[in-house]
Image (tube, rainbow, N blue to C red; front, side, top):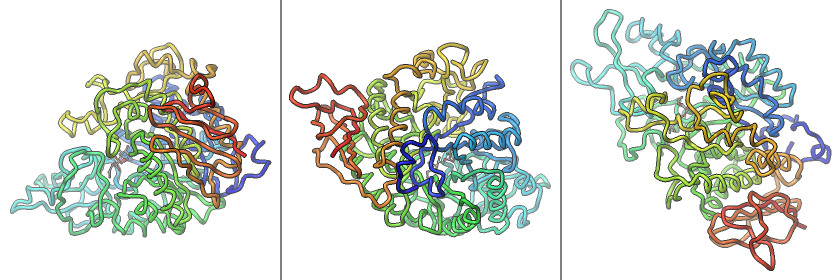
Length: 565
Ligand code: ISL
C-alpha cells in the first residue's frame, strides 16, 4: 500500500495489499514472557490468544512470534527439535493454528521464526548423526570433522561459540571411542547444519511450506548471515572480545558469506508462489548497510532489521548519519528499511539510553555502568516518535510499550541464558530483557500468570503494568497508542515509497526532517531546548509548555510531530 488513499485514513484495518510489509509495525511476541495462561511460569499460546486485544488497541499491523516449536529450551527455543509442531509447554499445533486464524480475523499478519543455522541436539537428524559413522549421509547434514593432532583430540580450528568457549564439541562414536567433532556456533546443544547439503535445503523449503500453508504470512530468519561456512575452516583472528556482538567482515569464514544469497533466492521463489506472496525479515548482523542491502535485492529477502540504528547512541548526528546511510543503501535495491530499537537479545533501549552515551557504537549486551532509568524512558519516548516517522517498517519488542527497562540484577540462580554458563559466569547474557510482562499491579507475577514467572519482575513494575498505564494519558502505553494511530492516519507516514524525506538543518544536537504531505518531525537529543519549526503540534513525547517565552521550543530529549504547510 505504498500510497495511502483517503479510505486508508479512516479505515481502522491494516493495509491488505501485498505490499503491507513495506510499512508495517510488527510487535515481537517473545512467547516465553508474554502471558502465561496455564500457570506454569512460562508464557504460552493461550496467553497470547487471551491478550490479542492489547495488540489491536495498541494499533500494530503484524506480530512476530519467537520460536514456539518443540525444544529442550537450551536457548529459549532457538534449539528446535521439531520444526513442524508447537512445544507442549506452549500449547498444541491446533492452538497455534487458532492463534493464526484469530490474529488474521483481527487484521493482524503473523510472522513466525525460522531457525535454519542449527537444530537442537534432540532433533531426530542429530540423533541419527550421532548413531551413524563418520562420512555417513546422516553426519553430512551437520558439520562433523576430524580433530587436529595425531589423536584428533584438538578441535578442527579455533572458532569460538557466540555464547563463549570453543565452537566445537567432540562426540563419542557409537563404538565408545572418542571421535569426530561437530560445529556449534552457538550452544553445544545447537549443532550447525551443513547448508552445502541439498537435503538440508529441501527440508527447510518444506518446513516453510508447512507453515505458509497454515497461514503464516512470513518468517523472521534467525542468524540469516550464518548459514554458509568456508569449507576450509580457516582459523580466525579474534579482535573483538565481546561474545555476542561480532558481525563478521569481508572474507570472514562463517559470517555473511556470499553463498547465503543463493539460499534466500530459493526461499523467495517459494514465497512468491503464494497469493499474496509470503515475506521474510532477516536477522543479519553484517558490517554495514550496503552489506545488508545485498540480502534485499529484488529476488532475495523483503526486509531485514536495521541493526545500525540499534547501535547508534542517543546523538542527533549519529542517528541522522545512520538513518541516511540505511535509507540510501535500501533505496538502491528498492527495499524499505526496518527500524528497531529493542529485541529479545539486546539490552532494552530504556536502559541503553539511560546510560552515559558512548562516543562510538552503543554497547548492546551486558551491564555497562549506572543507568538513569527516568532519563532512558524520556529518550525512549522521543526515539519512538523518530522511528515511527522514518520511512519504512518498524518492529516493536514486547514491553517497550510499557517503558520496561532491562533487569540487570536478576539473581544468579534464575539466569537461563546459555551465555551465563558458557562464559564461565562472566557474562550474564540476555535474560534481563526477557523478564515477563507486567499486566496487573498486583499478583505473584504482576498478572503475567497465576503463579511466579520464569524470571521475577521487580515490584516497581506494578506501576508500569498495563492496568496502571492504560487509562493514564501521560503513560508510555498511551504515547504508543496515539503515535501508532497517527502513523496510520497521516498520509505522510509509512513506507514513503517515492517520497524522499528531507532533512532539516537544526545544528548538532537536534535532527529533524519533513515528509510530504505536510509533516515534520524534530528530535532534540541535546541538553538545551531548540526552537520548533512553524506548524501545528500533532504529538510531543514530553510537554512543550514552559520552555521558551517567545516561541515554543522542544526541550532536551524530546521529539515532536508537526503538521506543516
Ligand atoms: O552472531 C552474532 C553476531 O554476528 C550474534 O549477534 C547473533 O547473530 C545473535 O545472537 C543471533 O541471535 C539469534 O540466534 C541465536 C539466539 O540465541 C538468539 O536469541 C536469536 O535471536 C541462536 O539461535
